[in-house]
Length: 348
Image (cartoon, rainbow, N blue to C red; front, side, top):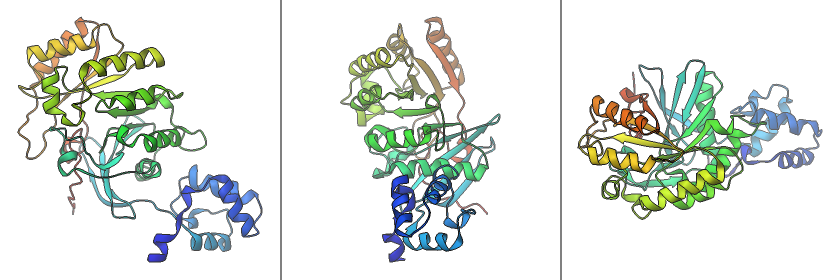
């Protein structure tokens, strides 16, 4: 076991690294491309699956390298077809990820950290704080796991699971590029969405990327005092600065950010809150996703009634703001927004 822990994950090798290993083993150069394709295009989990590679070479590689893929601890299946997974990495760290099928498409919601330090009061993920950030490979591994379980190609990925992606910026961007790579998972950049609580330095860096990745902002209130209470982790990034940063983002990229707005009864669904959101969005390029808050055990916050959500949608639309009421997926298995808490529910 100790020897296995010391072995390098083969998926951390570049094509040149693999060529060097094979040269050391006196193997023909063409084997490197074969092995690379098995690992990064076909996403195998073991050397035994590399059927066009000689068994002697597979055995030799298995003595030198490991596949550090996560282990599925729990899987829950929702009435709507969504599946939530509790995945454990070789060091014992676990995260949750969700697969959401819809009309010949498969979307995956990935976590970028184990736990979260943001402390949003409506989100179960942060109740136990942050354990650690994930590597880019660990983020991508979640996508591979869902694809294998469904037996389908993943068509879009949202970085909206556990953690704040911009608190793990470099690994998040590397994972985006691995998922976008035509030689790898090959998901179009616009089908890769990163959701942030509003970490302004991260938004500025994200605006500099050449790819057309999509940005989503967890907004939840356009009144500073309310947002401070709901999202204490981004208190220092004021709404005024956030608004200015997003305008710069739009000017620089030409891309439309979306605003996530989880509606909470009596908190952010009042007339002043609606007015403030309309003012925040008016005259800007954006899309608002209105979400009925998902119940989390132990929380005193309750979902807004549907009629209030529909009222806000009508008012935003009247002011020229594109708005969608988003149906949560998987809330019967605690897989919806704000519900990911690594609960180990074993199903018989």
